[in-house]
Amino acid sequence: MSLSSSLQSRLATPLKVGSLKLNSRVLQSPLSGVTDLVFRRLVRRYAPDSMMYTEMVNATGLHHVKTLPKLMEVDPDEKPISIQLFDCRPDFLAEAAQMAVQEGADTVDINMGCPVNKITKNGGGSSLLRQPEIAAAIVRSVVKAVKVPVTVKTRIGWTDQEINILEFARRMEDAGAQMITVHGRTRAQGYNGLARWEWIGRVKEVLTIPVIANGDIFSVEAAVKCLEQTGADGVMCSRGTMGYPFLVGEIDHFLRTGQLKPSPSVVERLRCAQDHLQALWEYKGDRGIRQARKHMTWYAKGFPGAAELRGQLCLIETVEQGLALIDQAIEQLSQHSDQGPYSQGAIDSQLVAL
Image (cartoon, rainbow, N blue to C red; front, top):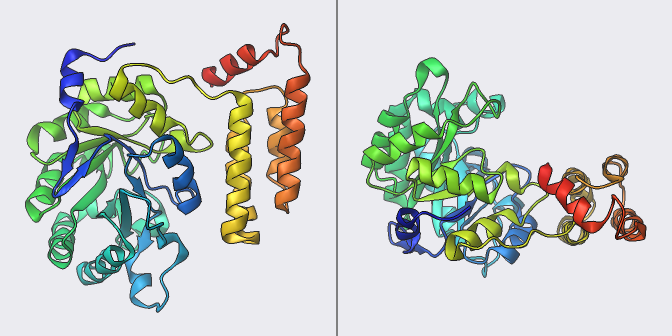
């Protein structure tokens, strides 16, 4: 695998998002229940220049609280950082955007792509694809309220019969959005089927603002293929980073150097899982342990005994219990013969195959 000369040339300069300059064209997607401060720190360990996003924040909820929610908390040193908001009320979103900037957001991102029923039934997320007038009013209101760039994340349409991303994206640009991220699926698809990158390419052809490609970016190879096919200005990694916070850095390294970064060994992945667990405990206490269960099971894949370990990790009650289980798994891996079918090379091959 190699970078074409045209792609190298296109990616050679920093990405300009309004007044903001990004030194990486690989972004970590906002993921509900995942991209908290702890997770972002892990991703940034391997991708220091990449844009990170908070979990999406309900603007209506912010309107009625005196203390900002923990999921909106950002580290003063984590730059660049975007706070993602969702709602269908332009005035509430403008107010929430001002709070986001006060918290340190370098951009404010408006979620217009979430497919979850509890979001769409209240007029937020991807339901705004069916209400482009309201979506445009939201962008105009937020742009007027803050001085940082305002961006949009969306999908290609509501259903296969309602793919309206080209007109929708034009409206967002006209309303003042300074970057758009397009997930190449409809709302009806959820996360099923393949992302239709061809629509992202069509969006790129009709806009002047940066277009970021999202959907099915699970590897360096997929990121390069997507960039080549779509002409997008960058890629955003989503589910591929769950249990694998190395991905954003691996893609960024390849786009910068044309060289593949060595993948982490299984043991390195499991040590990262321990760091993740310990940090969630320190940051959130018992709630962090409950949230850590899903993260730990995502890490436990692609090696002998992984299924058993997943079953144990999804039931942990304490940080000590989780750390001990992972230590035990690492010890068992180290006991396998370097020459046998469970050698580190064979184990890593299994992991790559997944």
